[in-house]
Length: 246
Ligand code: ADP
Image (cartoon, rainbow, N blue to C red; front, side, top):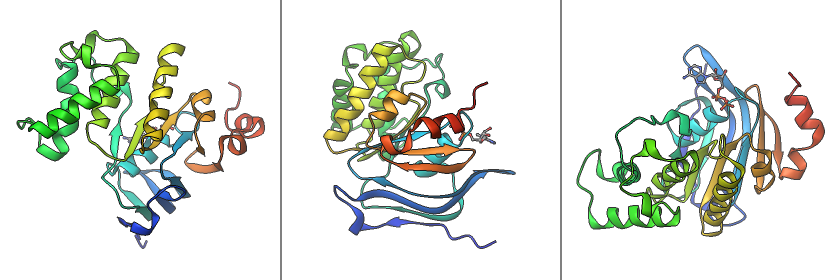
């Protein structure tokens, strides 16, 4: 099989109305387990894109490919000019019992620049402070991660992503398992980030969050079955087709 995996910057694609990421005929998965098949789509710049689909449809895998932690097996992936993406994993993937304070957790967002456990410089500390302020977790700085509510912990993880100072933020199910108030707060924060010039991609089960996005990619069994505005994509027919009643 020919592998045509191209990952390079495309300066012409930057700016509003353009695309931050494009992929074409993308295939990816895990050893012995192909997951994503033949995906072709774009992520609009300076907008919110929701990746929607049932459990196991490949949302996390696609985020992993966009984040550069999973290699595509074939296809093309192009990023417009910008910083490497910041990836906010699922809350469940982050140990609640790790003996880390909120500040230490957010500081880990600087490791890509500085290296693990290195002393942070003044610029790093300013980025960490700004991210904690923006997510409303500065007053929790010395608390242990494990002591926090789900919504607070999620905001800490988003602050860790923001501390990376990327213009492309990828989030895996940031509102899953939160109460409606915490969900609304996260959605409002993400909308604010987009207004401030960040391109956001979030995998979500939360149809309310997906309807509030600018663009939707609908996945079913590793294939893209819808792309466009939420109104175009999240139709009752499309949703009924992929979310069969149990
Ligand atoms: P979603 O995020 O939509 O729930 P995932 O991308 O997590 O979907 O999973 C897609 C498919 O890939 C599932 O069948 C899942 O079991 C499989 N999968 C996920 N992670 C791994 C892994 N590390 N190794 C093998 N298979 C995996």
